[in-house]
Image (tube, rainbow, N blue to C red; front, side, top):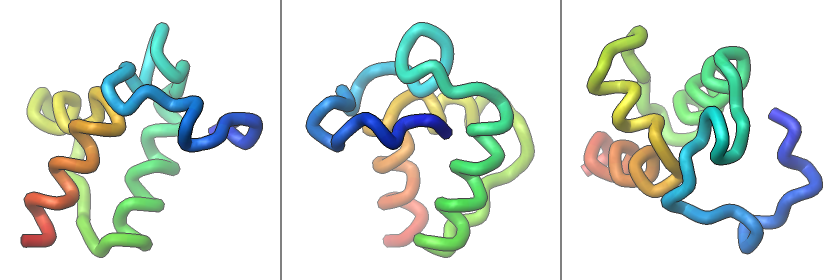
Length: 70
């Protein structure tokens, strides 16, 4: 992920993580999934429509992680 030049304030929590949003790609998705597992202990399942919905934005991913941890 090449987001080092961005601060948290620069990222719109509702912007898409992939495509025209933050511009992440499939390798970034793998890195993000591993980071979520290591940091929060939440294991993400293989590609599915439901998982794509959770990975839509920072906000949807945060909501998914929160739901899994409670």
